[in-house]
Amino acid sequence: MSSTGQVNCHLIVNSKSGLNRLILDQSWVEFVRQLEYKQLWKGGDLVKVDPKYTSQKCNKCSHTAKENRKTQSKFKCVKCGHSENADINATKNILEAGLTSLARRDI
Ligand SMILES: [Zn+2]
Image (cartoon, rainbow, N blue to C red; front, side, top):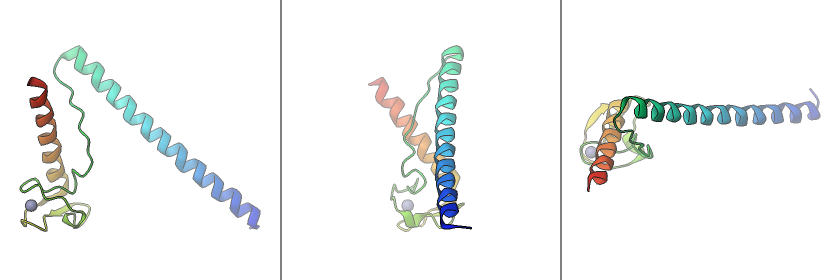
């Protein structure tokens, strides 16, 4: 393959990853729009939570570190030793953030 062909191939890959990111972003926008619609229709509260660091934060002691995440599925806090499935630990952090946000609304 010529150097021009390699450049064109690289541009296509970059364009495709940008398109994939755009599609993923639009999927989340549509997902949130559907949740808001259903919430209005059925009633209840929709609480949006910033997921930043929820997978690195210990649900027991709140210590947040990249090293707490041993693998994709294993969470072990380097401070208190709490160990749990990483998705369950993150889910508890998201639930706690949502409940905190709801409590602030009521004040
Ligand atoms: Zn901990």
